[in-house]
Length: 188
Length: 188
DNA sequence: GTGTGCATGTAAGGAGTTACATGATTGC
DNA sequence: GCAATCATGTAACTCCTTACATGCACAC
Image (cartoon, rainbow over all chains, first blue to last red; front, top):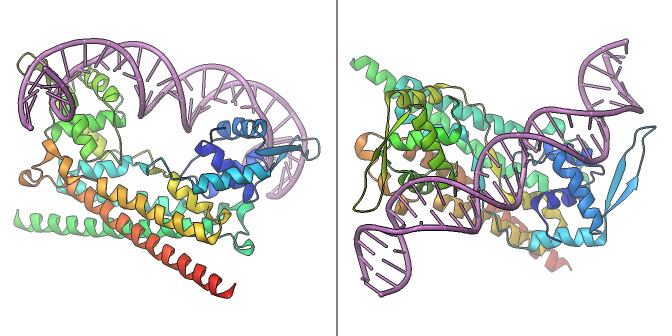
């Protein structure tokens, strides 16, 4: 069977301890959502597909009167996950950042408003930084460290490093634009 | 009319000197494609839509026997572009990075292969860095500097700063994993 | 003379999101 | 009691990409 990114997300999250579709979605929201967002409407059909192909097994696991399904990785499932990690990544890094796109077209604005754009860009990065691997939302993935799991932490640090630099850069741009604005003001 | 991101891309690129749909696509590929990719199948219908709403005017501009359309921003078009830049950005930064996602699940691999993942991540970032505002492909936007246009340069520098840090970080991770691998090897 | 690039569009398909539909449990 | 959360799914829709269709111009 063909493994799509959503398949790998599901397999990976199951391996890290999420058991239900709902839990997978929650764990993803709290960790990888800014790198690879997933929706429940993807998770449930994907779990069914993975089960049909024998990569996961489903156990009915009701909680009181509320129905619940618990999923487990099979050996084939674990193998498929590892095979994916070994395979060369065919897709490049893609970014969709309308706020950053505005920087590209910043010259259409007068200096005074350019400063605002720089500030907004910084805010966007700060926001992204804050939600990358949200400590308050980790939930079922809380005890990574205790199990020798460090992937999530590593990805978090990588993002942190890059975004910190980006934020610094935006702050510098804002300062520069402000300085230019004042220079213009004292001239005119 | 509602301005979608593709609308703003088209308006912005027209303002920066691209005149035909094809030229807009080329300019976007050479500059903003990694931040906001566009396809010709978006550009042509969007140009028609913008014309219907009076934000651009179309002039037939054949080149020999080959039909060609030249588009110009109207005052309303320029105004719409500026209004977009002034408006708060509703969409957050979104990233799709399968290669980075693998870092998250890196623990499923033995140490030896974790090193490969770190190397691949670095390569992905290097690749992204190389194609962010490709100097050889700029084409119609070549003479930005001479016209007091610096947006493209600023965005390029922001990306450069962030990605440089990311690449450094990946190199460090790779070195760390290699060191751990050797330590394990000498133990066993 | 032929391949690459310029140039403009349309149609079909896929991936992913939002909305819909339903109901139990738990904490305040 | 009531809101938020847990929990599972389906249906409709949207955005975007790939493929299709067509043909001139220019450089080698």
